[in-house]
Length: 240
Ligand code: MN
Image (tube, rainbow, N blue to C red):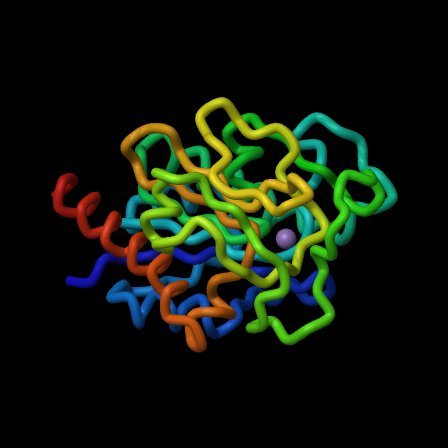
């Protein structure tokens, strides 16, 4: 049986419609996993039942996390907040980290990972004046627009097979203080954190860029999905 990879959905602010862009689930399928879309669930029982189904978790991109989760009041640069999605993802991510379920966080998903583990975010990197580069690109989503420098010997470095790679950039927030359980494994030249990973043996990886929009043209980025699926296969075999 294929490893089951839960993927959290975005949510429309007006209608509550839960949705997911195609290249997330297509990437998981291409990498040999079974993608299962997860809408925001509101009950503890629902969250636990969803968690029990999973061999791996993909936290997708989307709007901003409520800064209350990292102990801040909202600054003007914070965008739309979806409370049901926030609550669901924070609960599910906490369970995943405790159980060492394999997790890949993409963009917002990396930020959720960091905050669920006790880290903080820049609410708006332009407003904060901490970045010299353009992180909200005016280019097609599949087009890499800035370079990241990847730590030698990191899991991400092994997955991508390089220490310098150009990626897309579609974020206005970023990890500020990484949680203690994470190490920073990639930055842009202006110092913005572009990837974090767990310092233990469990597969926990967050990337600020969007590999789902890159993999069809640059197959090396499918390696991120393949690494999640392989870790999920090992998790499943160890557990059952
Ligand atoms: Mn960026």
